[in-house]
Each structure stands twice: as C-alpha cells, then as structure tokens.
Length: 315
Image 1: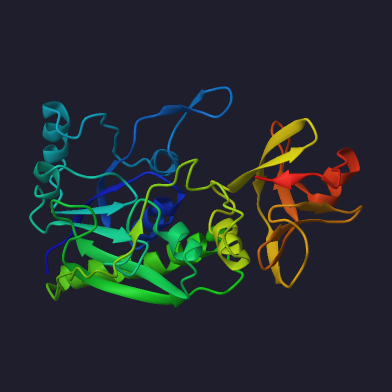
Image 2 (image 1 turned 90 degrees about the vertical axis):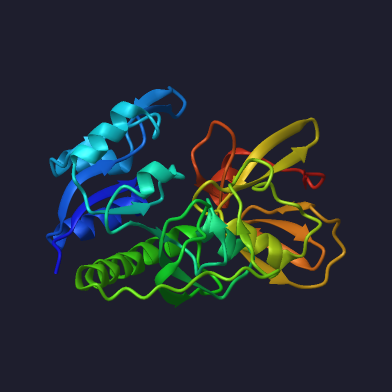
C-alpha cells in the first residue's frame, strides 16, 4: 500500500468541508492550492477564499497561483512531491498540472455525472425540479467534468429544499465519497466507469444576472423551483414597479399556491400581513425578500415601511 501525499485544490466553503475531512482522517496534505485574494463586497475590501482561511488555521503549505501554467508555480507544485491531487470546486486545470502526480488527479463534483456538468450543479438540479441528485468522484481529463468516474452517492431532493440546505447535505455526502475514494486508491482497488454522453444530458450553466431573473410568464411551480434553487445565493430577482417607482428585488423564502384567479400575471397583491405575486396558475407567496440597499427582511417588516399600491407589478 502506497502512502498518499495529497495536494488539495479548492476555493469555497463547500471545498473546506472536504479538506477538513481529509485532514481529520490523518492523510498527509503536502499542499493546498486556492484562488488569489480578490476585492469583494461594496467596499471592495480584499478577501481571502474559505479554503485559504482553513489552510492558514491548520498551518498547511499554501499556494495561490494566478497562472496555473507559470513556470514558477509548476516548479513549486512539483517540489511538493505529491502522488495524488484532490480537486473540489476549483477551476479547470491544464494538462501539465492534472497529469503531474503518479496516482492522478480526481475531482469531487456535486451531481450524478454525466448530468449537470459545469459550474452550478446544485442550483440547477433544484431549478429544474429534480427529485434526486448526489456527488461523483472522477479522474480529471482535458474537458470539464467528463473524466472516468470512480464512485457516486445519491440522495433525494425534497420539494421544499433550498440550494443552501442541499449544499450542506451534499458537502457531508461528498466528505464520505472522497474518503472512500482515497481508500480505494490507497488499496489499488479503483475501478472506473467511462461517462456516456446522451441527448438527455443537462448542463449546470454558470449563474448570471440574466438566468437568475424571474420570468413571471412561466408556471408557478417553475418559478418556485427557481427561487428555492437560488436561495440563499445568488438569489432570484425581479423588478417590482409601483406607480413611478421601480425596484430590483431579491426573493428568498416563498411558497406556491396553485389556484384559479382573475389577476394579471405578475400582479403584486399586498395586504398588511402578506405579499403574493400572481402567476398564470396561482400565487407565489413571499416570506423573505430584499429591496436595494436594505437588509433581507420579512414581508411584514417591509410592509411596515413601504406601502405597495394595487397597481404594483413584478416584471
């Protein structure tokens, strides 16, 4: 049995959970690679990645390359003498990097590959109304999320689950999958399965302002799935227009009531206690939302400060 010497590559909170599990299982982590520090937020204060914070806390060797093909980075990476690289929510690696360790480079992806290859698999599984998802470990190749699969673990998605809740569950399931994968590699018992492309493969496109905007002409269940699939981050949004004012509003906790009505699609119905928006087949009831330059609040809190007229509409 060959002792593993691991380089870990990752950036967000999801990756920290996996790195922490590898660390607590006493594997030899010879280096951690993460994104460079960058400005973030309204004040553009320079912030470090979640993985960097963890690596500093545990005093792990840390590299933050801007160019993964740069000679100085490649020299330093080689000097770590890793025989395996583990990648979780990082970026596409050049061949010279993923081919470097003797035992290869494997990735943990938060979907049941080949479904939902791409940047936002957890979000899109919920947005598309899937009832199951999972995680997959696979050896990296020269394309995005297409390599030979090592193992996968499946889980059910509940009808009310948000992306934040599913994210945390998949991180825990991913921890199990990574440890099992490391054990298989240590014992030399890995048996891979080649991914098969079909016309039914769905893609986990990168989220942007456009695909997070709500289209109120869709049916209520589709809108509901979109909102919970983007809650809490990056959040589904809509314009709400009332008389001469228009706001860009983020929606968080909602429910869908399927029912017949005579309201126009997108019409905002506000009482002293609730806000709901008409769809073609019912109402989206809104419990938490955020107006520009304001904190996230309940609908009732908002209605204490803003009066919406019967002419207000979501666009």
